[in-house]
Length: 335
Image (tube, rainbow, N blue to C red; front, top):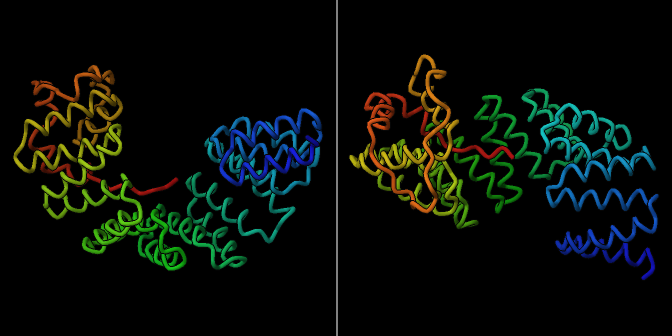
């Protein structure tokens, strides 16, 4: 097959979501023509979709060696750096992309993401605002700006942006979940529950909607409903440690100490760091005095743990009655 036809075939496969098949085609294209800068850029996108960010960066390096003015290559490499947590490199690449394409709302949006993820939320807002000047109909930009408002403590402003996100894209589940959390933290629990209900109508398997709704029910002291939602979250994601912890709290409040202790012990067995963290939540003066090596259990034990004096000493009545507001927190989607 001619190289151009093979290249086009790869692009069609990519648009269809067949990233592995597209990767095979572009590998052949580049083996025949190693100076095809755009092919490197597109193969990098395939690696990006496959979450292979290091290989994506290698291909974008090659593309920029061949053509150092490729705006999309800087944009995509910046996003790959961002996913690897290399925010300074991401910001540098995204600013380079802007030099070659200063009216791209996508670049401003992604630059805002990189800056926000580095912890500079107010600075990120400037870039989201600029993105919205060029494209005021992009629901993702409103959502991302809402996240920056939220992370910067401006929850009322975040709520307005999530409202706008949903107005522009009524099926965007993340916006309902994050708006629900804003409602919850601003004291409108019923509005929060309605948002999580809507999210679950759109995506019946959304673990965060169940988990967050459970946290709202917990704050309303509706422990049976809270436990039901944490059960659903755990069924969908058996590795979700916070759901076990909060189910344990709800079980404790319901008077079921035996089942509560199983959940608390599961948290410590699965995640040693969580053990130290929750010691800190109960106000332990020196968490260094506690071992980070939590007890280990075999998976085939099926989660059947024993009430122990060690456990009883960790989770006492003072912890659960006075530290629960710090521990039982809903999840904000920031990815």
